[in-house]
Image (cartoon, rainbow, N blue to C red; front, side, top):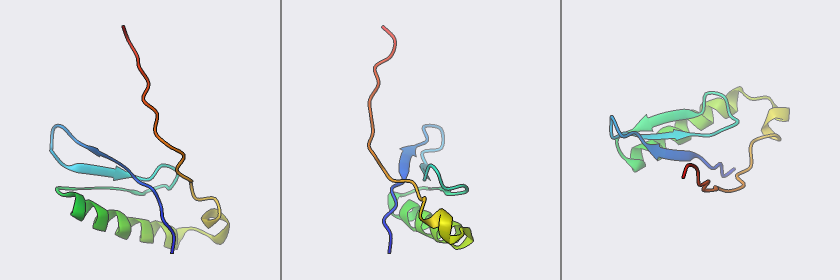
Length: 73
């Protein structure tokens, strides 16, 4: 079993949570609640991983961290 880090934000217009996994093509989804988003992400990740070959599995992205960048004046 693997742990994969997803990036989650809340869409201001719809109020939905949006989750993506950078580096895995097609690994994105949305949901009204965080619990639903987690279930949706798990499902989409399992489908994406099924489609990957073994070499690609060894190259899954590794979460490094988040940085806040101050811009403007």
